[in-house]
Length: 81
Image: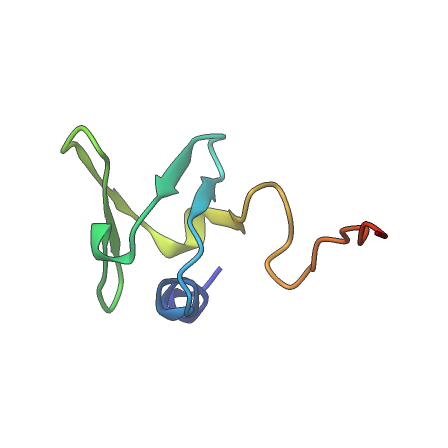
């Protein structure tokens, strides 16, 4: 994944929380766009407990949105009546 994909996810309005899934199996939750800094070659993610991780973009496997692909719309049945 490239940095531009992460930037797009952070700038999406309304913002939708997502997880950054890494090649080693870890995932980092992004609940708010201000908890992530995207530089020229690195990404820093601050966790709710104030710990932080520096990530190499090449190690990002995917960005996961509530278990669904970001472009996929959920199908809800409309109730009649």
